[in-house]
Length: 290
Image (cartoon, rainbow, N blue to C red):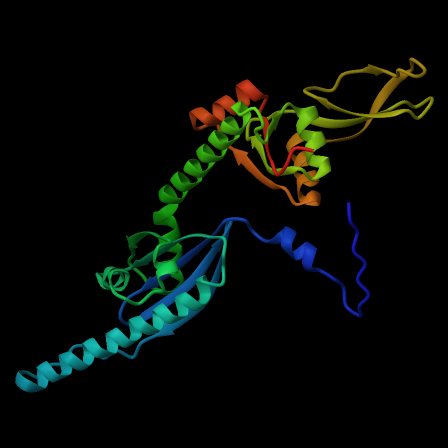
């Protein structure tokens, strides 16, 4: 393991910031001809990035030539506003390489015109997951977009989990496949920094306990399903649990230390059930095999 020493007048916080960053980031936008709000959904947090207003005039009561001229001005102003929205979305979302997808909402048909039109960079446009109807724009509209998209986002998460477990199984059946299972093997690879993705079942129920002998101070870390008395192998005295944490928390802490990705796999899919029942709720996709 390599340790880096930084000599500076300020605290070096980059590694800590990286650990705190949310892995799941979605782009959100809610818009009509009057207003647009661009935001990010980071895990369960919403970050409003930009609110725009258009200045597009309302309906004109005059008729004839004046009406047609005014309608053209309205359409031109609306087009320019959509261009401005697109520019701000491009600026906001192109800078996020791990953006999972984009959801666009709003009242009326403006959002569909925006999505169909040539307002977004192609890399941004291809990340649009869906559009949703909302009653509001602004921050209330963003909240409405999230509420109405939960089923879609859940389905995306489920599909991602299925693909990860399928990748794990494919690696496992290959002779030189980069996969491991069983706590001892996974833990060893994890501590070496060889794990790319750690797969843990949400139904993994166990604790990592530290037993210590009060007589000779012998210590041992064990994974247990329930607290049980243990005899010290050195002096045969009764050992006591001096520290205990959920097994998932223990493994996640190690993964964060070595930069391994962690995926908590639900048991809502066949693959998730297989991970739990056939592999003890734990598996790893490796970067390399040491």
